[in-house]
Each structure stands twice: as C-alpha cells, then as structure tokens.
Length: 417
Image 1 (tube, rainbow, N blue to C red):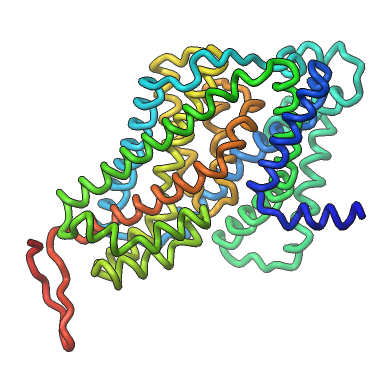
Image 2 (image 1 turned 90 degrees about the horizontal axis):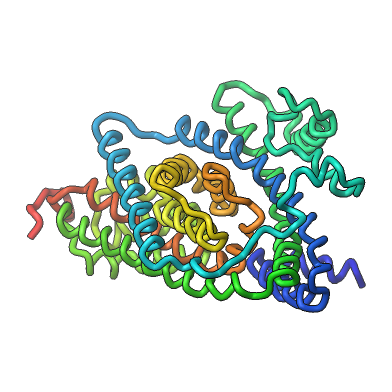
C-alpha cells in the first residue's frame, strides 16, 4: 500500500504536489499550533541545498548557452541589444508595479524561531539542528575556509552518484566538458525538486501554526500585481512591434496564438521553441533567419517574464517581512535578476533556482520561497507566455520594416504598409 501511494504521488505534476503539500501544511499548522515550528527544519535543509546548487547551476547554464548558441556578425549585436533592453524594461515594470501597489505591506510575517537565531545551532544539542548546520550553504564553501568535512562528504556523494551514468562518456572538447557539468548539476537539481513539496509542507505548517494566515492574504494581491505587470510588458512588446517592424500587432497575436497557448499549458519556453518558430515563419510570414534568431537563439537568453517575477517576488517578501529595500538594493535586484535569467531557459523549475540567487543578493531569507510556490504554478505559466511573446517581439524587430513576399519561383522584398 505505501509503495502504491508513493508511485501515485510521483506520477503527479509538481504543482499538484505543491498544492497538496499546501493543504496538508495548513491543516497540520492549525492542528499543532506553535508546536509545528519544528517542521520548518526539513524545509530549511531543502532550501539550503537549493541555495548551494543555484549559483554553480546558473554559471554552468550560462557557459553552456554562450558556447553553443550559434550567432555572429551585426545581427548578434542587435539581438543582444534587444534582449537586454526587453529584460531591463521588464524588471523596471515589475519594480514600479510592486512599489506602487505594495502587495506585501501589512502582512506582518516574521521568521519562525527555528530560522532566526544562528546562535541556537551552536548551543542547541539537537542532533537534527547540528546536522543541518553541516549542510553546505554553497557548493565550494566546504572546500575553502569552512573546514566542515561533512559538507565535503555531501558534495562528494552528490557528484559521485550523479556522474555514475556518465562515467564512460568521452570528453573530446571543452563544450563536452561544459555539457557534462550542466547535465550533472541538473540531475542533482532533480533530486532536490522532488523534495520541494516537503519543504512547502514544513514551512507552511510552521508559519500557519505560529503566525496564522496573515501573510497568505497578501498573496492574492501579489498575484494580481504580477499579472498587471506582465500585461504591461506584453503591451510594451506589441507597441515595439508596431513601431519597429512591418508586422501589425493583431496579426502577430492571431498568427502566434498556438505558441502562446503552448507556452501557457507547458510552462516551458524550451518546449515551445519549435511551435514559436513555425508560427512566425508560416503564419506571420517572418523571414526564416529572423524567426530562428528570436525563437531559437533568443529563447536561450530571453526570460523577461521570469526576471520581472523575480524582482517583484523579492520586493513582495521584503514588504511581507517589513523590510525596506532602498534604491541601491533594488538596483542589486535588477542586476541579479538580469544575470540569473540569462541561460536559465533550459533549467527545470528555473524560476525556483533563479529566485534563490535574487533573494541571496539582497539578504532575503530563502525560507519564505515556499509561500510563493503556492501560487507559482499559475504565475509560471503566465510569465512563460510573456517569455515567448518576448521571443516573438525580437523576431519581428529583427525582421525590420520590410516584409518578405513569397512568390512561386522567387522571393522579393516589399515595403511594409
């Protein structure tokens, strides 16, 4: 019977697992009250592992993306300029909406006691807490001045097991080495993602048990705020298409609706790439080179919706905790969101990974990420659709103001009307 339940659980999509963990966490938190605070410790362990893995994973993904992306010449400079501009505009919109609406103000949450005092770890004889303190906070920390042998063992076990399936793989080029590192880190990430529902259960139970539902009431306003910001970003894309290309916005929306629906349903920009390319080429009439640059190459770098969401999430949690992020800290959010979003398209649950980077950059506690995961399954689909719309925007702008007219035996250029 337990094996049957376990197999059934594994067959569920991650967002279903998170929703079930949310319901169970609320129930246990209400039933146990303040005693539920002990359940936050497994969640803290999982989030610490995720935080340790995130920086090298983003580094490996960025290196692999830059090495394998095929572009060159003036087109590549124009492509990079468009991608960077779109990302900066997205983050600016997200920060503006979060600062104006302030969805987290008044929530009044605080860190559960099990998370607040690192000094407790040194004086508390609880073996679970002692074990938790030995889990590395960063991948290379135990190899430096930390001096924690248990941390080194953690890293050795993880990489040793992950590399077993690749032990006979031939390494002929630097690209092969970069790909092997990325594959290994993604395999380890999958192991952590399996445990994410447990983290959600523990953190939600501890928060509900000790502080009630105050912080969760703000989530509805946060969802509305993110949707407003994503809608503004989509409007920016359409305006840019109208002013900078021969294509008309309504034509784009009609011709690429299959790609947008696919992006929303799969929550994956990578899985949507061929659909986006096909829609741009066959339905809208974009040149093959422009469609390829935006939908295939640009998609590896373009995560505007994700960057917007990360920036808003950081401000929301800061507001929930009553923390004030000054202008310098918000600029740091911008920079970390841009850096974390590049090359993250091929990473499973990329939003979860990059969020740890952004939170760590401004000193926000990772323990509140599970609160966001309760609504992330829906917002992930919304921001993925905006990511794909960003790819479409780039393709149209790369195509310029002259349309390609296809005749049976030849192709001619025609000034857009």
